[in-house]
Image (cartoon, rainbow, N blue to C red; front, side, top):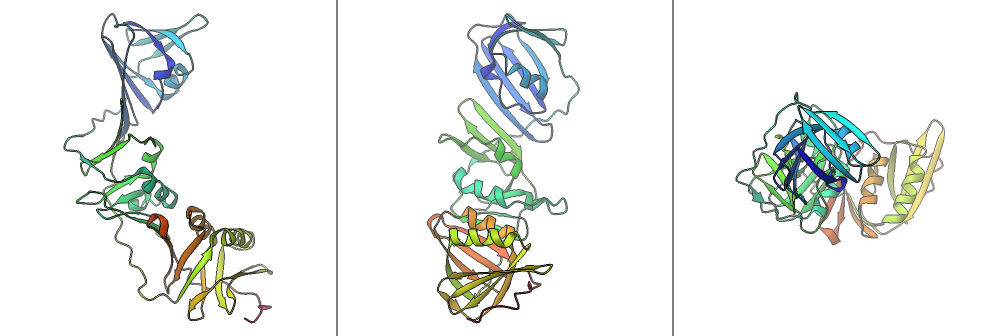
Length: 332
């Protein structure tokens, strides 16, 4: 089999990349052998002299993607590529895990990629709790969590039963307007013109987050000022204690004799309290929010941040061992 190709069709490599040529069509099936893959098709400028199918490694596939125009020949399990300056020869991979995706009975998911992507910032990595490694799509919301912080987005997804999409999958889902997501409860497919990405779903799903019914405090916090203060706190401690006073809230950190206190002047509604949180996770939540002012409820078990403009809610579990505050604390 002999054909002329351009490297522009060689993209989206995965560990195994099967190329099938038949007349004037070329089909790419790139996959990891464990349930995730990309299927693409393109039209050749000229029909191939005979049909052929072969499989390249990610390294060989990536090498070919740099060649611009070239000739490709395949015979006797050997792939040869050449142009005016180069000749190369690659072995056809014949020993690889075969995986055939089940893509029947697919249903459209009525949600935007923009609503799913924020969840990828809040995933966990716990082999004993696989449900935290994916973005969970429920009929009425999207949820992601590492067990300490949660992202939720209220939306009608069009699903009857929840699914859990592996976080790794979002590296391969194209963020373009024509992209369509579909599922059959076992697989998720992202479709665009000439390209389909598929992945198996995580069987385990997150339970619904139980919110604190009666907040101890309510406040509207300036996002940028909070991020700036928290980054300073992070230099001194892994945790921050938030205390109330007559001017608003004060952020405290202390570690090995070093102490830091930062005042943030805001209106606070509720009783006086000292509440501690993981400072890195709190920075991540504040940085994910686009609203300049963040509506916050401080509960006995968690902090709840609402991003009203996008129907997003971010939840951070309270650190239950209070951080020692400065002994030179200013009163009120």
